[in-house]
Length: 221
Image (cartoon, rainbow, N blue to C red; front, side, top):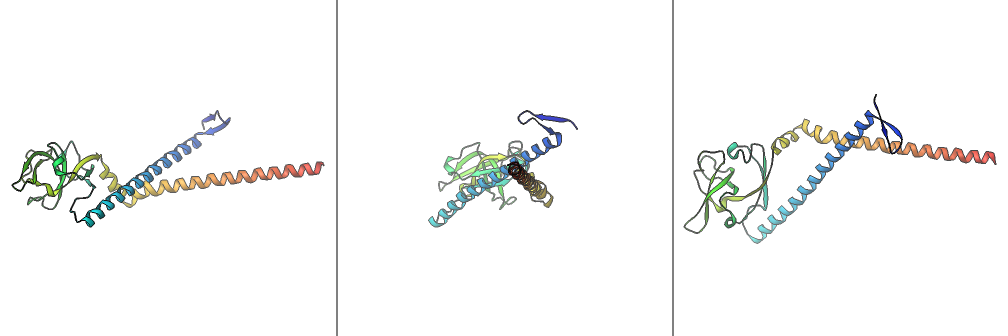
C-alpha cells in the first residue's frame, strides 16, 4: 500500500487513514449543515407563528408572512422548473409591479382551489378600488383566463431553490432517510467513540509507564 508522510509528526499515514479522515470530515460538515438548516427553519417558524398569532389577535385576515411551495407544473419554465422550491413573502398588493412573480389562489373553473405561481403581465383596478392582476406562465402561450383579485395573492416569489423537490421526495423515503441521515450520523458517532477509546487507552498506557518508572526508581534507591 502506498504510504504518505505527515511532516508535522514524522509519522507514516496510510491511504486508508487519509480516506477515513476525509470521510469523517465530509460527514461532519454534512451533518453540521443539516443541523444549521434545521435551526434556520426553526427560527423561521417562530417568526411565522408569532406573526400568525398577532394577525389572529388583531382580527386581520392576512396571508402568512412567508411560505414555501414545490413547483409541479412546467408553466414557468425556464424561470422556475418542475420540482424547484420557491419561497414567497407576503407583500402589499400596491407594491406589486408588472413582471413580479406571485403565488395566488386560483378561482377559475379549471384550477379552482389550487395555488398557482405565475408572472404579472398587467394590473387593473376594479370598480371598488381593489387591484386585479393579469397573470401568465412564462412557458404558456396565452395569459390566464381569470384576473387575480388582490385578496387571493399569497405573496411574491423571493427566490427559488433548484431541484429541492427531488431531495424532499428522496428524503421522505425510508431508504433516503437511512442513506442521507441515519448512516452519516451513525458513522460519525462510531468514529468519535473509537477516537475516545484510543485516547483513553493511550492515557492508560502513559499512566502505566509512569507507574513502572516510579517502581524502578524505588528499586534503585
